[in-house]
Length: 312
Image (tube, rainbow, N blue to C red):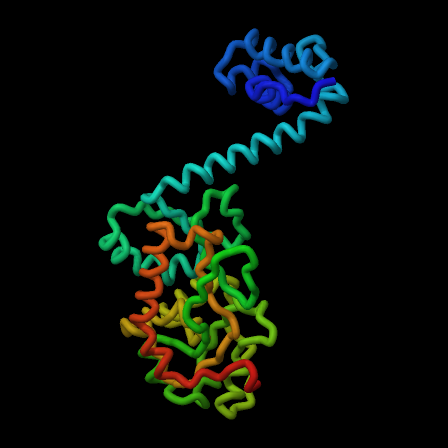
């Protein structure tokens, strides 16, 4: 028996027929006639020296040899398709696909994108707002923005600004609750999106840093940070706002941050892409733009006393 691989066209015909369990449907997918597809599979069986399908009345079934080949053929064509897409992306300098969490997309990226589009009209931006782990090759993603304390082995990782949280509210609420002590009576909003951090970064810890023994328990709870911030912007209450998501609203006066004590989270947003991709023109332009935008509101961080985790 020869170890020489059969023709790719014959393997492709087999893969389609094995997925559909129908020669007619496989032929339609490949835009060939059923007779042409049947000929390709027959030649593959002759190459193997054994049948791959049992031809039954109005249907086909895989033989043991067919089942042994089907999974590997499907995986092989998936890998080949992913490699082809990756090769195509190396020649594309005008499209940039970015994935980021829904909160970061709506509160950081979306309000600033006009300036990037103005500066780089040649780049077509595409966004996937998701917290799922993405496969850069499989999912056709160029850049991922992710938050946490973990490492990023095998990836180019550019840490963005230091992350902190502190109470933010509308200017009207800030006038009603001007002191940390007065916040004991304020309506509190809970952002549970960072409840996974350990040690926790929460209201109890912030009040403790202000010398107040108080643990608020009542108030609306949100699993998404952008929903919690939308509630704060609507005047519902006071929320521990995360730096990246609130600095623009603070700088523009939509939110007030009347206290100069913030809690360090020990976590950061990171700009991620596969190693070696970081200097592709559109990726480099996007990273440089993000860093420039972060610097525009860096004065807010410089005005704070940020309490690191080690002080709790």
